[in-house]
Image (cartoon, rainbow, N blue to C red):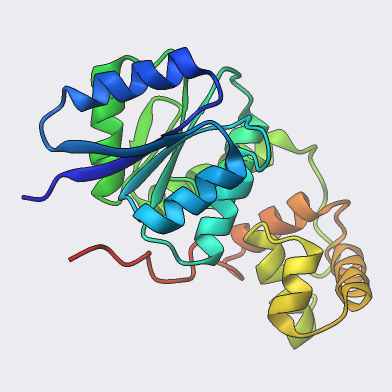
Length: 234
């Protein structure tokens, strides 16, 4: 069985080396690179194509969530574990929407981190000290997002239709894409995207993009993971 290739990215040298040293002692795990800078890390991940990237959330250059999002856009085989010193549920929500497979505290025990790595490689997700399969993480995301935003009322007609283009934009919004990314993907202008988002919020009777995403997910209009999982190495 091939070793699980890992890249570790953290701008604190002592912590980063501690993670590298701990993982290097494990059978079946190979640390193939490390970095302290976000942009440098992204290039390293593109070059090495490891099975797992362990990223600090806060990095100089690109942050951990930006790297995660870019890897997902590129359909990279690399699955991201984000490490953080802060327990903030909204950051966890954004991380999972960006494409992370796990989000855990920096004080995680080395043995537990190894378990998380192996679980992520197997296709599972890890947040809040629990492991989830894909349907489980989708349900978790909807539940936690609802708790994170203030309650809102449904519009008078729960089946109020959006146009085809508005549904495309809503799907992109639910996947956490920026207006610029949506414009590039759909081949429309940035201003047109803004107009569509404004219309979507008005029609759904919600105040922001996060609430629109919750609305779409609750009703099954959009699935968080509507694409095939990233390919795996042979």
